[in-house]
Image (cartoon, rainbow, N blue to C red; front, top):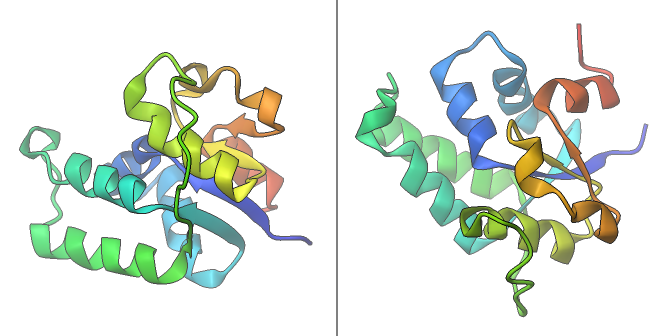
Length: 142
């Protein structure tokens, strides 16, 4: 089976760190297995870090553990430099980092809990999938 090239929205990482029982955590746990490629940019990783370290999320992960996770994500992900901006592309400017990486990488999909936030990505040939839909797509859903 061909590896799926995706961009993981920050909402999926937040969900994965809040609970080890859902589809988001399963996606996080599959990253090292190479079941799919995931694409990154510096602004997207900075967004991950900024959001995951918010105290109001009340995560049980320490700052050091979050740093280690981000290091692993950076090690495993396919890195892209963004040379152009597609803004404004989406209604929420906070989602632009995800969209720009997806367009640059020619990703097949964006994996997010906020599907509505990424309306319009289909004009770039990019699907928007929930974590559960993505796991089904790669044959990893129960």
